[in-house]
Length: 242
Image 1 (cartoon, rainbow, N blue to C red):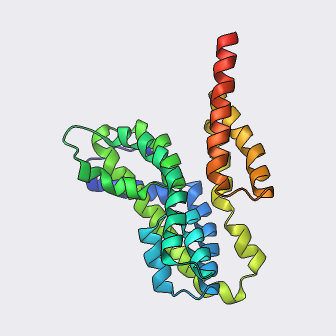
Image 2: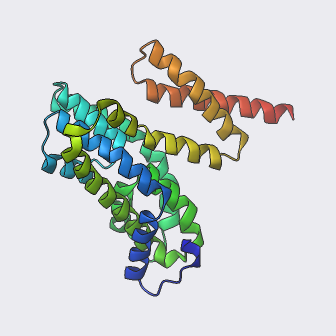
């Protein structure tokens, strides 16, 4: 556990973050997910270099899947960029929740830009779990190390999937892409301690498939908006009646 480690320098905290990334359950999740993404990139005719660069610049498996599938289907660059941007909006609340843990005396805005870019489901969940156990002066370096460990894992296994694509069954490659949302669902359910969080999770699982069935545009966004709003209203009514 990170809480049992004593760091003597920022570089030691950085290395400790990489070690935590490579020994966490999300290492396996990212490995499997990016094998699938690598195979997808190969099937759409993108190069290995393009895959690695997009992993660094886009950095989020769902956004990369959207980018690959939209460009591969012939969408324009502008259309693909808008789709990726909309998918990335879900990360904004995660950044807002994470940055207060990283702020400290002497911290400037440019110090926080890198972890803001690094924010993903895996990094965010592990950061919220581990950072509070660390002294504040080592948190930024540890978080960056954690993120580098996850990004390196993604790039490495993306290349594995890319070069194995010829012999990888399509159904298996597609199933690997569900590892990230599945792990996020499990971790969210585990960490949902407030009633409003539980309500939002249950409503999202109910509403989301309905929006997909009726082919509602931006179904993921509307699932969050409707499910979160209804959960908030129901929780306020419950508290008022108590």
